[in-house]
Image (cartoon, rainbow, N blue to C red):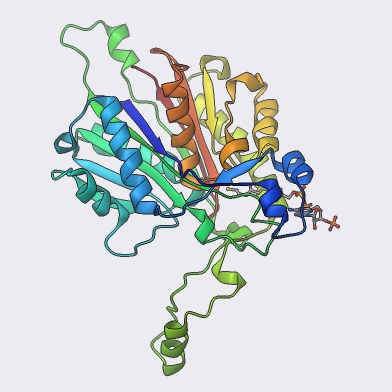
Length: 343
Ligand code: COA
């Protein structure tokens, strides 16, 4: 048994900030940001929240799949920027959509989060724990962005993307070849906590024990730079251009596939130069590496499902294609999953 993606959706806030807007806040320029990152603008929440965007993306994915909310028995939301600690964002999505039969939980693994949500849903389905999963990446990174730090505030944006996965069994009497087509591919994922300092953000709550002093600082919510995303940009860049092609190579070898068997590599959208470097190291044409980061910037765990949804709606994905999803980011975490497109 395996599972296939049978619907996608996304929600993008309508308000945008382009590089010229950012240049009014910090010492930077449109030219510098375009050249170093490929980013032109990013969409930023006004009234939306991580939860409301997740619900909207999920609603659209279910509609695209033609599946009723009651059929969903697992909802996973990948996020590092939920507006809620309790309840989890996935339970809020359940409530919004009326997915009354779903088990719901959140997953936190930054920009690798959507790949891990996909793997988790696949494991639940192939393990017989559920049949239909709604997986969502939703982020309001504008809330975690230090708008005085030009090293980071140029990079990030807000948005949400979603996909529906459903169990698929070989039809009775299917040939061996048809059965093999439905086989699940094994993903490869890695983590290296010893390099976590490259990209950090402290909780806004003080978890250092309940002293009078801490109680006071909690009450005043004294935020400093460490409560916003802090990054060693060059370290993250070097990690990405080395680790991403390596993990894609591992996933291809594990599943006895060649790079040329893959129709599209849907990478986490962090930086155009990272995507180009990965394509070069894999020796694959850049046309196989779709990008939309010029429009949205880095939306962490939402970037892969937003791009997947755009490609699905543009009709670029065809039954029989194999697609690689590859994420990388804080943790450090990174991983690649091979997705058979069966719609
Ligand atoms: N505008 C103008 N100048 C800037 C700038 C900005 N927004 N940010 C940094 N600079 C300056 C630096 O101060 C430095 O100046 P100096 O040479 O006088 O010291 C110079 O530009 C080069 O800085 P550097 O950090 O080496 O730039 P870079 O080429 O590495 O680009 C990033 C910076 C952040 C764009 C790049 O490192 C990057 O994209 N890293 C990966 C980040 C990422 O993807 N993170 C998320 C992963 S999930």
